[in-house]
Image (tube, rainbow over all chains, first blue to last red; front, side):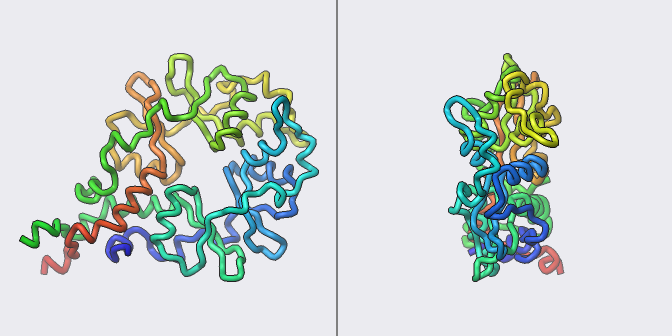
Length: 159
Length: 159
């Protein structure tokens, strides 16, 4: 359980924590790798969500994954980029939560993941939660908590 | 100013917050881009520090930067990778702090940067501070703060 007062400063609300789907760069599962590489290069993302043609969340694609696919020991086979679909090489094991997520689950998952995907119960992509948003909350707690609250150690008070 | 009690849970100490230089993947400023690309692909890093031959911190190199360098409108010129040095295209405007950094500076900088470089006063690379480490602290605060402390709103108490 997360303390109520800490939570109040950590996030404004569960809803504003989520960067909505329409603001997130994504690629289609049937896009070719050259398209995905161009998007990742242009927008400078390390990794983006992969959606199917119904906008359901299917995986993640990263630049290292694309490069590994076309690299062998001696060379990089760039000509292959137009022949391979994103769905063939994407990472299907992506971290996600449902829309009624618990903040504590998200906090744990973000220690090891740059962002967490939010999907509804049918698997439709709803948005992402980034480390950056949580770090804004961490800043608020660090700077404001002890200004707003009187904090005493429990042991001392109990004596 | 960061509250003392919040800080105690947020980080164990300023020293343990830093991932030391010898554990961080880096590239040399005179390395060619093919070497840097291989490192980024193999280790799955989005961006790594660039050091000169004295181990001084000089910049950052990312996979999007490398790809942009060899891409033009119609093609990717992979053969150029062996001719270009990292130092020619790296990002020289990197976020950094000195070893006696203030935690609040780091917290602010991490909202917009995946990691912060730590250097000494001569510019030697000492390590990095990652979002992941701060998120571990955020988890500790979220879960333990109100268990360890009695927290009261200041306005109510002041009445």
